Length: 95
Length: 494
Image 1: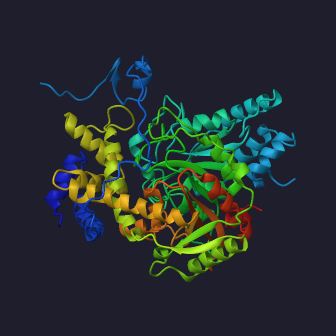
Image 2: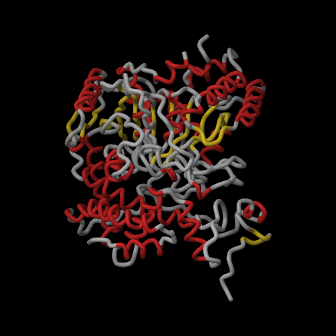
Image 3: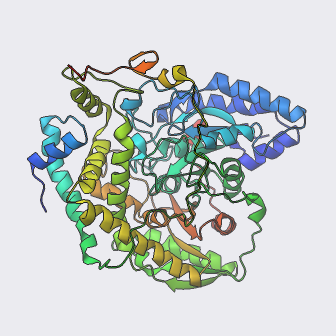
C-alpha cells in the first residue's frame, strides 16, 4: 500500500489541517516509511484475538443520569478567541 | 547546612518537620534556582509569586499542626496539567494564551497535600516526542554534557523540562506524563528517577490528552524514596476519570524495606536487541548481579511479541491522538487563524498554523488508520496485537515478580541528532513502549554512567497495581549502583 500526494491531501482534508505544498511533499515519504514499517504486524496471525479496548480489567462505572455540573457560561467562554456571551462565535455557516 | 536545593524531597520534608527550615526559605532557594536555570529553557511559565504565597500558607498550616504529606515542598508541573488561572500550553502554539478555569485532579491532590507550584515545565508538543525538540516554546537543554564535548544534549522527552528541572536541582520533584516512555526515557537521560504507575492509578482528568488508553501521570524525582512520597500525593480514585481505579492508595514509602529475598526477577531475552551498545548490556548485567546479591532469583523469560510493540504503538497512539486533538479548532480556546471567511477554512488554517510538524504527522497517520477501508487493517489489527503483548506480560508474571531491562537503548543524544528520521526517533522507546501498551507500572532508576560520562537507567516493570514492589526493588538497585554523579551544570554552578 503506497501513499501518493493526492492521498496525503485527502487525509489532510479529513484531519482539517492546511498543508503547505512543501509539507505535503515531505509527508508523502514520511507517511509511506511509517506505514510500511507498521505493516510488519501483518506477519502475525491474530485470528480469534480480541482487540484490546482497555488495560483496566474492570467494568466501567455507572452513575445516575443527572446534571452534576454547569451553570457558568462566562467560565466556559473565558478562553474563546471570539465570543458574544453567552455564545462562541464562528464564521457564518448559513447564508 | 548545604544549599536547600541540594536536599532530596525526603530530606527537605524531614527538615521542615523538625523546624530546621521553613517552606518560605526552601521555596525562595528553589525560585532562585529556577531563575538561574533559565538558559536551559526547562520552564514555559514560572510562578514565583504564587509559590511564595503557597509556601506561606504551608508554613501556617504546619504551625497549626495540619501538615500534609508534601507540606511546603516546591514542585514543578509538566505543562500538560491544567492549572487554574495559570497558562497551560501543552508545548503547542495552538493553545496560545489558554488559562484553564479548572485544576487537574493530580495537581489538586498535590496542592491538597501541601505542595508548592514553582512553574510549568517545557515538553514535546502534546507530549509527542523523545527529545523535547518539538516544543513550540523551543527545545530544553539537558544539564549534562559529554566529557570533553560542549555540544548541547537533549534531556529526552516528552517530559524533558521536568527532567531538567529535577536534575539541575531547581525543583524537589516534578510531575511527568508517560504514554510510551515520556517519564522513563528522560529520567534515564538526566540521571533521575522516573516512575510510571499502573494505568488507572493517577487520574487523567485535566491532563491534556494525547492517547487516552496509554497516558498516565507519574513522579520524577532524584531518589526512589522521593518518588514513593510524591506518588502518594498524586494518586487516588477520581470519579471524573472513568478509567481511574477505586483502590486504596498505600503508604508507598513504607514499602521500601530493602528486603527482596525470595523474589523472582525476569530478564526478557527479546530485549537483547541488535546493535545495543555494549555499555548498556554491561549495565543490565550489573543490575542482575545487584539483585542476585540482594537474594533475588533471576530467570530468563520470553516476551515473544516484543518486536511488534513499537509498530503497534505507532498505530494506536496516533489514532487516539487524531481523535483527541480534533477539539483544537479555533473555537473554544487558544489560537484562531482566519481562513477564507468560511468555517472549514478557519479550522484548516488554525490547525495548519497551530500544530507543529510532528503533531501534524501523527494526526495524519491517526486519521489514515481510522479512515474507512483501513480501520480493520491497521487500527483493529494493532489492537489485537496489543492484546497479545499484554498476554505476554501476564504469562511472564505467573513465573516472576518483576522484570528488569534497560530503560533506553542509548545515552542522551545531541540536539539535532536523529531529527531527520521519525522512525529512528521512535526507536528510543523500544524498551518502554511494551509495558505502556500493557498498562503496567515501571520505574527508571539511574544506575551508571556511559563512557562519555552520561547517565544510564535501568527499568523495573511490575504487576498491575503493585507499585510497592517496583519501588522496593528500585530502591535496592539505586542503593547498589551507588549512583552519585551530578550534571555538568551543577559543577559550573559551584
